[in-house]
Image (cartoon, rainbow, N blue to C red; front, side, top):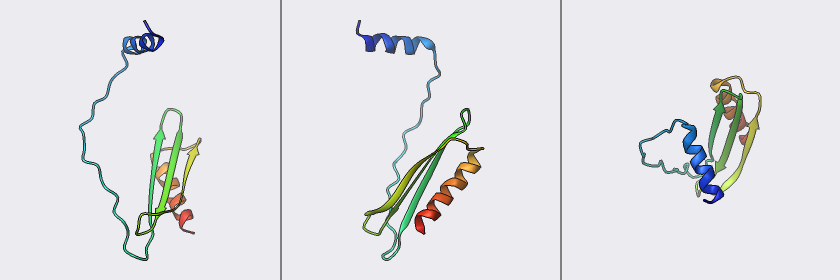
Length: 95
């Protein structure tokens, strides 16, 4: 048996819960009106470790990326704090 097969068998034997999700229709990015910049931001939070990840991207009306960032936050307090950090990062991207 290959090493990868052994690892897969061990993983399955652990009995970790599996999650299923209903497929969704992807949301397509819509450009801003001419002369405007659109800033999209997102955050993710792991409650157990209090780690968070932030991402921001700025695009013009043609969809060209004007700037962005991806950032790790090792000391986030909760989901609301992460949302604040994401908005703050988006505003700093504007300035």
